[in-house]
Length: 83
Image (cartoon, rainbow, N blue to C red; front, side, top):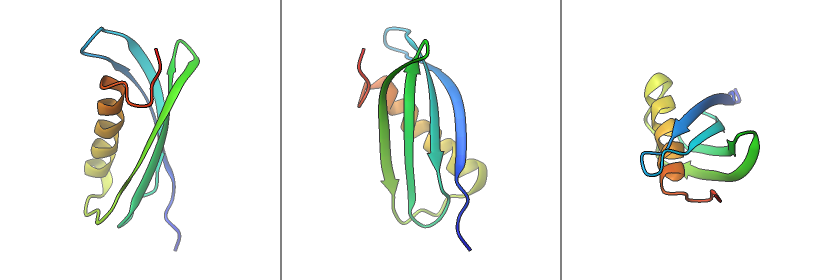
């Protein structure tokens, strides 16, 4: 059975600078989790982030929180995001 793709839309405010970004991240649960996000500021695409988590043992809410944290850390560090 194929894994379903999960989509999360949320808002993040940077601790450094206070800029507000909206993002959508999509991922599929499983042993290897590939995720990708698109980051916007006031509706304008500012960049995208992505990654692969191998040997994953998380599921449900724990996996969701882990993926959200990865996206928000990328935004905080402006990794793949332009001002």
